[in-house]
Image 1 (cartoon, helix red, strand yellow):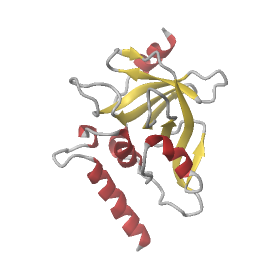
Image 2 (image 1 turned 90 degrees about the horizontal axis):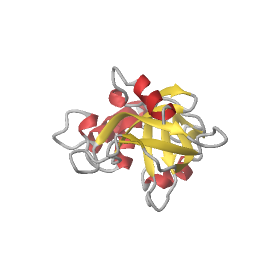
Image 3 (image 1 turned 30 degrees about the vertical axis):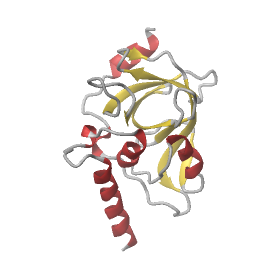
Length: 187
């Protein structure tokens, strides 16, 4: 019964994150937190930068991207509430793709979902502690570096949280791996 209720809660969370008229998770317009929760299945609430500490003891955490994991950006002057995104593809040990919301402006407004966006590790220690993100407004890999706490995986610790199930729309059928690599290494 508990498993059944957990699945119902995950389905309800996915629909609650999408607007009533949305037919797809990718139609979402809003903040990154509800989107990441619906896209990853990880049930954490509150400002994005608080997710890292909230995951402690509930979900496994680490420092390498894995499909379905939530990457937690630290709070900075440019990101006063932090940011969360969901890993949709791992391209190389230092290049991944994320699906997230509320990053680039689309049709002049923020909040839209973006699928398979290039993310690159630019840390000196190759440890994913600092990243750059594709920025649609600039039509290229952003120049700003963002500190990252790490990755929250959908695997619960000691049954304190339900196992997360990433959304089917987390990644596209034909992501641009070549474009992602060119964006990172040709600059």
